[in-house]
Length: 140
Image 1 (cartoon, helix red, strand yellow):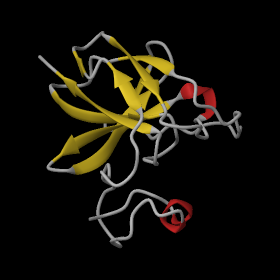
Image 2: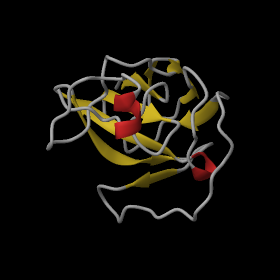
Image 3: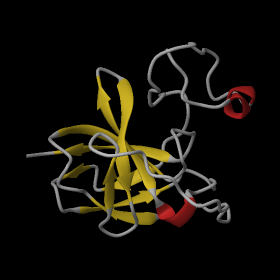
Image 4: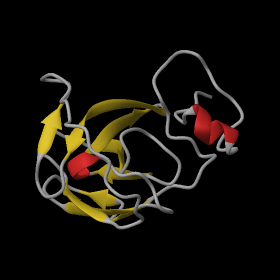
């Protein structure tokens, strides 16, 4: 199984197995954030609450990963509120340097019309990390 955790999380025991290639996956080995509701439709809002305090992204951009056959691929960034930046149809956005305070506060995001029915993960951190990501399902 490929770990999406960095070396710091590995040292902390998030997972004991690492592969050197392939896309990141949402590992079952570490605590997940909560997302409410877990089943949504395009246009619905979700609230993502980390399992514990995490380093959030600048400006509450949330990476969204499509989960297929247990593997996750970054498809875009939801922004707090209703924004969406799709990395499949445009360049990967760049963010100005910042370091918001570590927090366990929830953030609210709107499910963009670019998401088709399926399973996705959304994270409060800039990548898949323990306690920061939650999985949700988009229905037709």
